[in-house]
Length: 346
Ligand code: SAH
Image (cartoon, helix red, strand yellow):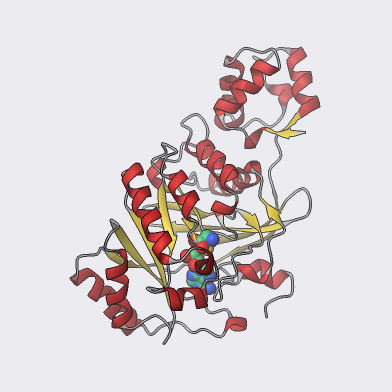
């Protein structure tokens, strides 16, 4: 069975031609699926009865099911979603004053092995299918409907490395961005990568006006290779030019994410080195308060140090912010809910 939630309009049009239907069928289906939110092919009244039978035989519209739900006092919702094969993935909804942001998971587990991250405690089992990523937004939209709201922003910052599942992530972005589907503006969508140069360059050529965030976390190879093994494969002298090339072709700024780890990367010398490193690229810096993962032994940097780091960057002309924290009274930190469920965290 082909899950229609995973097919962007251009591919659905081709599929309809293969089914000896007109291209227009694809638009009709999109209207039923996303605008009218119909899940029963029998109710799609302007589609011929005979083709509805074909749809029922070969296609489905199945969303992930909610295995566990946590709601924090600030309204953050964390879901552990169960896929058809029993795989469980985390999805988080955060309520910023500018909108409802969903943090989407792109893989079951992760192989990048970042030394501070809870997600990597579970190795990658498989890539998520496009419909499993779209499904994360649909389930959150269903929950928000009770409040007459919907998902307005998406960050692909959940478990997994999106550029290790590139084609599916791009199709996912096309579907949620499609005016006829979930209509989330391109500038409201951000994909975050640990830094895979050829995919960063490719991403710049997709013609999408979507944002890119780079998990940098360290200003030199020695430190970055220590905390992020991916840096051994793609060191900074390869990564930074790839980002510059992305900026050139996409004509977009990037955001560098930088987790502030106590006594590891939080000094003003690090800030100075960071600014020198990123100078060839047009960028923002987002400082991230670390969510401690006991098993890894890192601690969060002191807030005075974070503030001093930020002030230094701003003083030297780089737009820098500190990431707002959500859901601190639930297991909202990166990958913690699933890891706990699987008995890998206390
Ligand atoms: N693989 C992608 C996307 C997933 S991680 C990437 O590396 O960007 C999303 C962001 O959360 C990354 O910047 C990651 O480094 C950060 N992160 C991971 N564990 C964290 C933790 N315990 N506390 C704060 N941020 C964390």
